[in-house]
Image (cartoon, rainbow, N blue to C red; front, side):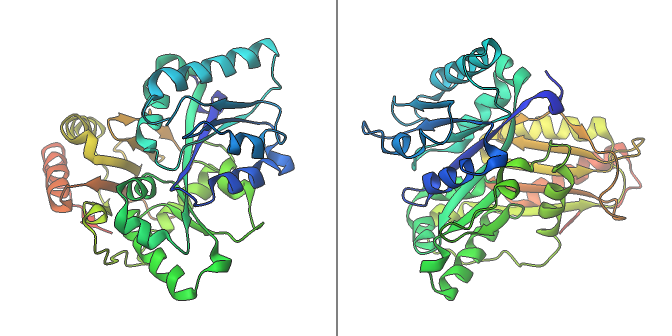
Length: 349
């Protein structure tokens, strides 16, 4: 696998039908500092409307017109990315520093992320930069109650972009924020109105970018510091099946014990562990270890040069489906006890 700093980041831009993905993408690609971005667009349907909207923004735009990306992903996405890599190496397309994949409005981002993390050739050259989900401020709460696709898109996100805020009432936006935080405890929530887009904050910062890594970690640690309760009441069972929580461990973790525990967790429950993010204090390691997982697949750990603050507790964020927090907490505590009998138990953040 290539070094993170040498891999090309791939950002997945997803969101439910009509939530503003293409508008967001077009605005991002119009920014001068994102001119070196290649785009893969998936469309559900035969008419290339989205392609027409963005084709003049960047020279290396590809259109996947073979149906829903999440339904025919394994061959087509791999082939498109390999072709794009080959064209870059041969000079057929301008050199690009990042890739943006826009999914269809009904796509599940998990198989896409899985392909990027698991396919050997792709993982040597590319890394998952982040999952960006657009949510309609006017209709988002109702969509979360009615459509499981919308719930999954929110739960998987690293950033949640609340669009059309200029058209929504304040109480609508507040209710949506509460619902989003319940489903995803760590994602940064960004509100945008028409034309109000900050490219650097959305695409260039991620957990493995040297310049943006500290800012990204600060965002998701701040989201778990107790500022928002995250206990929204969604009446439909689509959202009731998914929830997010954070655990903290004051004593250093034994890396071997933690690795065995996580391998067993993902082997047995990987389909239901949508995301794991963690900043770990590992015994014998002076600097924090960063972990990032999507369902069955976990990025190789990354070592940060320094702790972002004086707080050196291990902090692990889980986004899960049909799993109890108490069960996960008890099993990890048991493994920690085996490795370090005197360690204090973890607690929910």
